[in-house]
Each structure stands twice: as structure tokens, then as C-alpha cells.
Image (tube, rainbow, N blue to C red; front, side):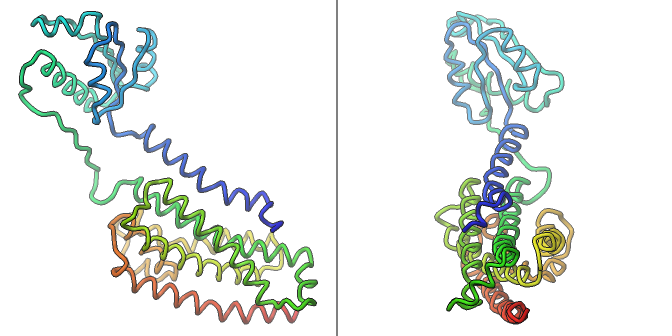
Length: 338
């Protein structure tokens, strides 16, 4: 278990959570599709509460005029609105109170238009008149298919699956080889196959746990797709653990292992490009052996595929894992001979 205290392994554990935080920051704050409004309410207007409840925008309450200006100026809000002290009573009496707007020139015109439509809708309800139209905002993507964030989540999960699933067993095995403890283990009743299995099981459990945590934190895990996702992650982790044992048997030291992971793992992760870049023929992705557990993960998270539709891919993944046991056995015998 000393291998788990390595800074590299600790980073592999922290990495999914760090990436999740980054995704949440980028796609829910920096690239938020909803308009952002700052409100300075001088008299506890009901308009403020209605704006707060509006699902089509994000609202921030400013305490002073200076704060409102800064929110708009520095891009925290697309528009600022100041409501005077007797705003509600003036609207209900039929007067036309001034609605002071602070606009950021660099803001999106569509955001300003949406904000104004929502405000006008609320004001018509306030003075008792029937709105001439219903404001309903629907965000459409620039192209067809799932959003970029939806496609990035399974991509990151797969990177964790491939990197952690392969690196942890191989790194633990290399650590035993470099310290010479594996030689001491082999003079005990323990067999080499048991030593390899222990490394694979530790890496497998860690990888499955990290992948499921990543899916849950990003909202991709639900009761509808829970079982297919778990089976897909388990099958993929089995394959990656076998590949990790092959790396560990082949590499004589940690430096060689790092080189193998950096070079060969890029090839193993190749099918991910098929789902991030449009126009790549499917047969190109199918050339890679990892396609058979990468494809089910994408189909489940993005298309809602069920267990029946991915059964063939899962069977192919399990067959691949069983086939990898033969080179593991041959390489372990060679390592034992040395």
C-alpha cells in the first residue's frame, strides 16, 4: 500500500475532483448561457423577488450604486437595473416610473433583450394587465447533438479510466521491482500470479471508485443509467488493469513506465476524438480496442442507451480482457525467469 502515498498516485486520486471543479466553473459561470442581471432595489420591490425566481436568468442584488456599476463594468452582470423607493406603488397607480438601466457595451445583445422582456413581463403583472406574450427562453446550441460540456464529461471519465486503470497497477508493480521486494515475495509461498492480481485489484477498485465519483459529481449518474454505467466502467477497468500489468511486466523502471504511459495511452484514448470532433468515420474509432468500452459509455451518457443495446460491446470488452491475460501470463513468466 506504500505506492498509494506516491505524489503521482495521490494526484491521480485528486485529478477527477479538480477537473470536475474546473468543468463546473467554466460551464456554469464563465460560459453560462443564461443572462446575468444585477439589481439595486431602493425600496424592497416585489419585482426583485420575481426576478430572483425567474429561471431564465441569474440575478445578483447590489447594495449600492457603485457596486451595481462595478458588477456590470467587470462582466459579472450583463445589465444593471435600479428600482426607486416607491417603484411598485407608482406602477400600480398607472404612472410611468423611470427604469434606470446600466448596460455593459461588451455584453451580448441577446442577453440584454431577454432581460428586458422578462422585466416587462413582470411589470405588466404588477399593474394588473395581461401580458401580450409569454416570455420563454430556450437556449439552442450552434450545432446538432449534445452540448460541449455533456461530451466532455464522459471524455474526462475515460481519461481517468485509462490513465488510472493502467498506471496504478503498473506503477505498484514497478515499485516492487525497483525496491527488490518482489524477489523477496517470490521466495515465500506467495505466487507471482497472486502478486500481480493484488496490484490489479487495487488499481481496479481505485479506478472504478474514481470514475463513478466523477460521473456522480457531474450529474451523469441516475437511476435510469446506473447499472449500464457501472457495468461499462467495470468492464473498462478490467481491460485497463490487464494493460497496466503488461506495462508493469515490460518496463524495467519508473522512467520507462512514464514513457510508455505518455506514448501508448494516447493511442488507447484515440476513439475519444470520434465523439469530440465531427466528421470522423466510425470505422476509424472501431480500429482501437478500447472503442468497445468507450462507445458504450458515450451512448449511455449522451443518448440514454440501455443495457440491451450495449450488451454486444460489453461482451467484446470482456473478451478483450480475457485475451489480454495471455500476454500477462507470458510476460510474468519471462519476468520470473529474470
